[in-house]
Length: 151
Ligand SMILES: Cc1cc2nc3c(=O)[nH]c(=O)nc-3n(C[C@H](O)[C@H](O)[C@H](O)COP(=O)(O)O)c2cc1C
Image (cartoon, rainbow, N blue to C red; front, side, top):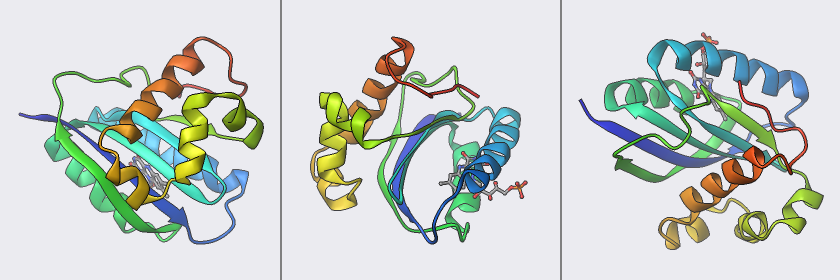
């Protein structure tokens, strides 16, 4: 039994409204709880970045469903690696919609914005995506970002 994580970026296929995000999160929490999958989903502009961690079988099954989802496209996996322990264990799927003020005020997020969630730019810097996602958890836990919520 191998614990792995997958990090990917993707692009929304249409304008994403709150109702879409609620629906994505509702499915995510329901399935991930059952499958012992944890992680974080960030949304900025029209781009998603998600990290999923769990047993390989559960991650494969989850990714197969996510890849087929017509609400996004151009999904590029940046990283798929065995991990010793979870980094997002508190969240069956943490979520945050980043706004430009937050991004520009936090160095870790500025790097994210500059890379524009662009797969080539992020993939070229190994470890950058995970570093940014962990930085996000650190800032969220310190209470200095607005509407982050653990679900
Ligand atoms: C950006 C994005 C992230 C998603 N993340 C997850 C996830 O972490 N876990 C999950 O089960 N489904 C996730 N989904 C939803 C799946 O693609 C799929 O719609 C859902 O699992 C279908 O289940 P349901 O019909 O039972 O709601 C995500 C979808 C999108 C667009």
